[in-house]
Length: 117
Image: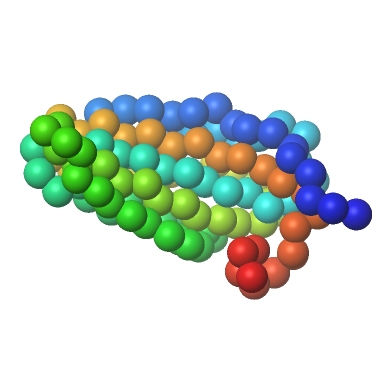
């Protein structure tokens, strides 16, 4: 059996605050959850989001935006278990930073360790 796409949860977007992206529907035990988090700062270097409990941060990268400021893209992963709730992703940039997060789910990925190995 190969890896299949399950769906996407609701996006959470705010200015200078934590996000709480919704979990995708129709999840099954062991589904891989991938949380994509983005931030844009027009006032300086963009902050790194906090990693919610039970999630592992895989990668984060920031880059200068031409005449605009800085952007950061971060992704994290977890495996869904019964009773798991939507995470809160903390953020402590400057007052004008834009912060958003969304969770995607896949079925049939490795069930432990690093899913990109």
